[in-house]
Image (cartoon, rainbow, N blue to C red):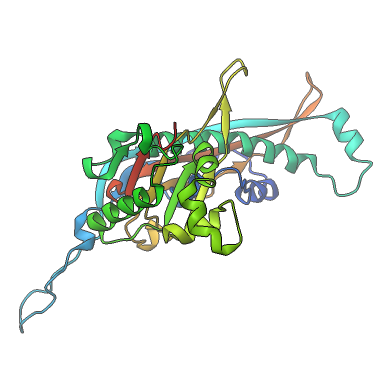
Length: 312
């Protein structure tokens, strides 16, 4: 007898599932710290990276001696992927209007709208992990205040970033390649007098993320512009707040023996998926169910440095 599994109970729309899996949102930047990797199961243990990955090993061996073995990661805290499901709705009236225009695909549009909502949820989850001071060792975090905050002209953001980079390098042997900051931080930083003085010979009087990356000697500087509202929709908050995260992130997959990295987003293989749309008579609409199974995880906190309250 065939056992009906959760996945097998769904009839998948392969075209719209491809649309969902190919969805990109430039406003969401969590993948800069938590790149997605596929996992085969909804539960397991986080592949955590410790100092073993950075040690010097005596590889010499005499005839007949055992060959030394090297471990680059170990099973850390357990993870559990969470299923998130939403349905996109396309009223028949809109479908009838759209049918008059060639190339308009309301089904794909509904899927992308749902994906945008889910992407914001993942962005917030990832930011909460990255911005939690308790996730970091005592030498991998700092809270700025007063004239040390980058909104004060006498502060020194370049020196602060260099100290963060050195802290990560000293702990892991890897020089950070990514700096993530909140939108308010970038707003102050791009006009900071010490930054402007360093870029004056470029012909620019306001720093860009590309110029900041060059100044900080990192591969990329990424600004989190996303906001979220309260349930009433009356107040909005920056997802990434006033904080800065300096990190080494490895874009290779853990499943392909990826190198030690700050974090990953574990994503169930084959997801997100879109079930076949169905007709809802009560609302006279086509319904497009979308499901994601994922969880952002901190794989190597020592590969990151948190600067809290970078601006006032």
